[in-house]
Length: 431
Image (spheres, rainbow, N blue to C red):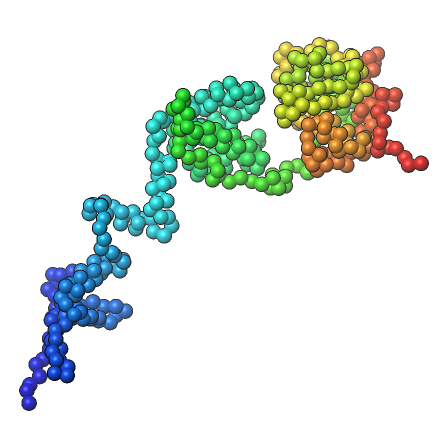
């Protein structure tokens, strides 16, 4: 009986990083003999593994793939034709490792190219804003609108230290909007203010991203604003005051009395229009140079053309009886010299908010006539807005008192005159 030869494990050299070996083995069965190639020397789940192949080339290919896999600590690898050299492949591997599961390499490259690749023509935000305002002015945008755009955009310029247009990101804009404060300098700005700034900046960056040969645009490859948070109208309304600020009939009477006597009645004509027509301050300012053309006392109609109206839609306002009386005694133009100083002084003295006179007109009109539709037509608002904010804000008696205020020239004061009172639908009694 022949002595069994002791089999020994063939091991790789100690200097090798990976200990995979190929051993030729002779097999015998049913009188047949053949050779196989056994690959061994790696562990899976803590157990030694081995695998046999029919020919050496197949075994060598397996060893090559398995070696790469083990050298990269379990990272799955594939051998394929690639145009990248080893240095670039190594850079790609490091990039994948740095990104992890948070972002794809394509996302990272896309973000970098949008925000860090300079376009053919680069420009600072301050210079871009100047060109933008010039173009909007040529388009016929009103001075106040231009001023609002300039004010909002310049705040971002100062906050971000005048960056290049293509460097502005959604994150930097959000940081700027979060830094906005109310007039007290402490509390955060309202959601309405946030949305307003967002609208202005969105139009500016959209313009910067447009292709235009004359200005060498685009100056940025992407508008960053669409990704910036926008608050819903419901959220804005919930934060706003429950009711708009209005002036009581007694306070209106006191205000008009003081204005009749102050500096020869220099501000009386302006505030008479403001309280008894519901015009917006900016609309009244634009109308002032065309008063003779647009105010027809014969027909009792004040026309607000589209180029004066805030909504760019023409409308007509009924001239009430008491307003006629005020226009007879109010001297001079609607907007006298040094008007900004005078207007601010009157508002500060009587503590009037920006649109308080307009809010008063609409709310007392609805109270007196119970017509949301007519109030909306004259004020240039939608019926929805009038119904939501002004309906049932005041009783009909206060509406009657408001529209009965007329000047008493002899006593130089405002008085309630029942003869000038309009007919009230709200006070009609059923027979």
